[in-house]
Length: 108
Image (tube, rainbow, N blue to C red; front, side, top):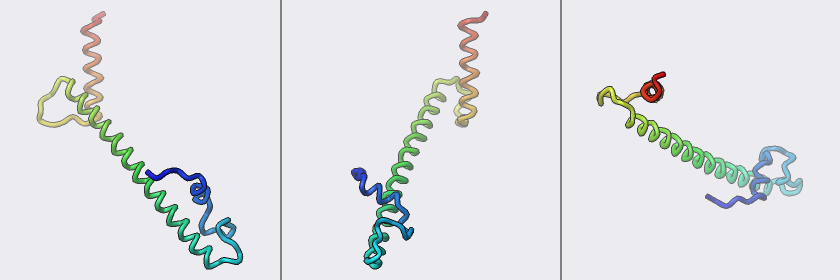
């Protein structure tokens, strides 16, 4: 990931299309268009990198969640290897199984 530059971040907060942007000066309208395009391009690049990073974090999160469900399915008494329980079914089965184990340990 690129290093964070607070000056660059301040520029990204400005609206590149607004006429009151500090990037634009009245005497350099052709240069300001280039600066605006560069700011938009930088903004798009940063947004794409942030989106890619967020997508990667979400993939890791979902992968860990799915691995957790797989581990839980592995310790539950099976109904056969015919099909994998859904996440909802896995949680229901775990709840029932924990209740049954609790009854065995404390039948009163």
